[in-house]
Length: 333
Image (cartoon, rainbow, N blue to C red; front, side, top):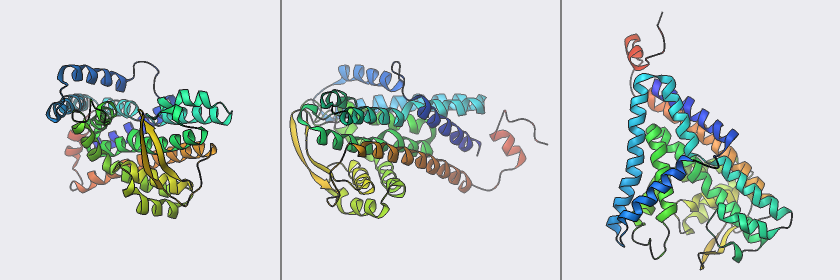
């Protein structure tokens, strides 16, 4: 029970920290993990799935294992330390505030008519070729990126935190980072990145569905979001981005998908919520606000799920069990 309360307090504090502070410009733990994963890649890289799978195990498994060890050591000594560790891990792995800031910066440039500045900033948010996009294409790319990253950078992490505590938070973000680094279908990573991409698909599955559901609940058109999710999600090439982007499209009343370009490669993706209108610059702000609401709702769901798991674990504990489970809490009278 105490561990579950520690998670709830820590996750709430960590998400609040992200809302107030965002990501640091230097020394971010995820960036440090990325550098370490890059160093491992330089040693292990072969054009082979097995070596790529080893890379995923070493990097993601190492990060989750270190988090599990730290969590175990801290929990033995202090509940306050356990809460602090959960808060720090949550702050480190979620990125909703930085996501919103980047999206708003691009939206501000588009609103001012400065498409070149918007193109310069777009790579901070997604990997599309900015020079191939006009103002409308940039706005659509931003809304799609906000939708997908709400799942990847916020909801998915909270889901795995609820399931597995600090190791779940850290492990999920490690896998998500590896997918961003090596999971794309370039000549170098087609085989080597296969394991990271597939693992990201598996771990991202529950968070993507929860994100879509919460977008429907928090958006302007719940029925439109659910309809777009039902009708169009399976058309998307990504099993997890499809439900999220479709639900956001329906919730915002806009049309997403279509032609896009990655690394000089043109893709023709299916249209999501075909009955919606074209994305306008003002929809970027609407998408950011929807993302923020979804993140807060996801925190509530994660805390409730963690509490329900504790309640289902067994009968009401005795006084001695509470003292053993909750050291440092003081004497019982």
